[in-house]
Structures are given as C-alpha cells and as structure tokens.
Image (cartoon, rainbow, N blue to C red; front, side, top):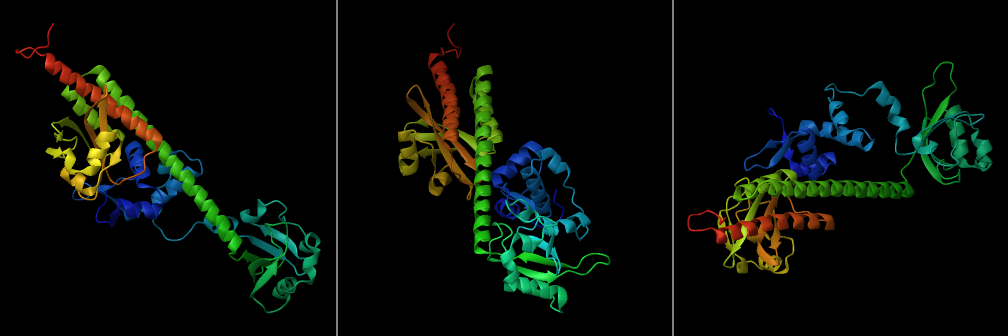
Length: 384
C-alpha cells in the first residue's frame, strides 16, 4: 500500500521499469506483486518507490531466477551507496572493453573484462601485448601507453589493437594511469570508447531483447486466453441458465485481466446490454446500423476494436478500449461479447481463435436458453 508516496500511471510505470502493463498485471494476479493503488475511476497507479524493486525482479527473472524467488529477494536497502561486490563488478560488467596493462616493459595484459574475455582471439592475463601484436610496437598508441608509465601524463586517448576483433588495428580507448599499490606492478587501464560498431551491436541486442519480451508477453496472453476458454467450458458443462452466463463474464474479467466484460444479445437490429460483470457498461440498447465499425464486425463475424464513439455508446469509460467479439451459433449471429481493457493491443491468431471459442461457447448457451424459453408451457415449466 502506498502511504503518501508518489505514484505514477501504469503506462509511466511500465516505461520506467521496462515491464509491460500486461506483464505487470500478470505478476500482480499470480504473485501479488507489484501492488497498485486504484485511482478515482478504477485506473491503476503504482508507487515510484516500487520501480527499483520491479527492475530488480525483471533482471533476476531474465537471469533464470523463478519469479517468486526474485520477488522474495528484492527487499532493497534504503541506504545510499553500493556494495563492495558492485564496486568490483563495475569494470567486469561494463558494456565496453576494459583492459589493464602493466609496463612499460613488457606491456603485459593483467586484466580483461567480460566484454573482452568471451571474444575469440582476445588476449588473456599474462599475455605480452607486443608478442600478440608485434606491429603495435611502432604505433603512436604504443608510445602513448609507455608515456603513461614513464612521464607525468595521467590520461590520454589511445589507438590500439582491437581486443574484440582479432587484435587488428583501429580500436580506441581512454587510457589512464591507475594508483600504484605497494609491491604491485604499475598499471594502465584502457576503457573502450563507444564506436559505431559497438552502438550497432548494442542496438541489435536491444532489438533482440524487445523481440524476446514481445514473444514472452504473447505467450502469456495466449495462455490466459486458453485458460479462459477452459474455464468457460467448465462453467457450462456443470450448469446452465443466465446465472451461468453471468458467472462466465466474471471469469473472463479475471482470466483476461479485463476491466469489464458484458454479453450483448441481438434484438431487432440492436444489441441489448444488461449489467456487465463490473457494472461499467450499460445498460444500453445500441442500434447496430448507427455505427459502421460495429455493423461491419457483426456482418462479417470479425473480432474488432471499436471506435471511441461506439465504445461510449455502450458506456465504456473514456480512455479504455472496447473489443467486440461476435457471438455465432449454428450459423446465426446472436450478438456480441464486449471486453473492456486498459489499452488496445494487437491480437495474435491464437488469441483470436480462442476468443471465438469463448464467444461460441457463450452463444450456444444463449441459444439453449432461447430454445428452452420457446418450449416452456404456460406454467413456466419445460415439457416432460
């Protein structure tokens, strides 16, 4: 619970943490984390103080840690500063090449970080740089390195062999003298300067990470849609009637992380909307031909996001998205399943297929209720 702390919208929180709104709702539903507060109108807001925890969980999960363990391990300390372990990791995990050389004779490699170590042909601690790259002995960069050992020069730009590309020429670093520790060799550190190639590499990695996250989110949504269909099928297998249909809408709200869900049966060219699962929609009677997007979706049997004007006609709150899923049974259009969500999103073929399965299951239940009603005797009981 937020007690006087600053909060931000779900969209801003997703941008700050790198965790999509869909995934935030999935974590909240499955693990109770993070816990948003509800603003006026029911929209989610998140505590700014939770940003670091969510980022820590995301990074742990990306490293293969199970989500519950990642959440349990993120009670972050409030004191400023970093741990000795983090200090030691600064160079090791830098996204650019970091190398330390002792010298001036020989110029020996004493340390390489992960960005160098994992590249084929890269130098290793103990290697003599000029034995690996003899051509470098006559280069200005070599003279610059030796001056850092022998003169008052503290730091300088330096061109040197590319540690990550077979020790070819053309790499650039900021080279600087490290404080000398008693009994140890004098050291010069080289920190790779950002190059166009490195920027391209990072961009490719970032694109791959976004693609991976998109696939992960889509997989999660597919799973939720499949769970929704299974739950709806179980409801109508065990019970029937309008109470079962109402239960189905409540299940869809939970399973799809929807804001609201309603059934809108067709009647005389209109969709008749009773009370929705959470009471945000209707009750309204909406004439289908007044709205081209709605008429087209029902005519073609296509799942469609409705325009803002159409959504308002059903009573959808401003700023939310309304999805219409036509309900078809035995070749007959019986109306539409209406789903209100925080924001519009592209639906995969799998999600569309599962939504059609959900709407068809509800449509058959409606059709059954209609047939039972037609067969009732004047006393209100079905015939024996």
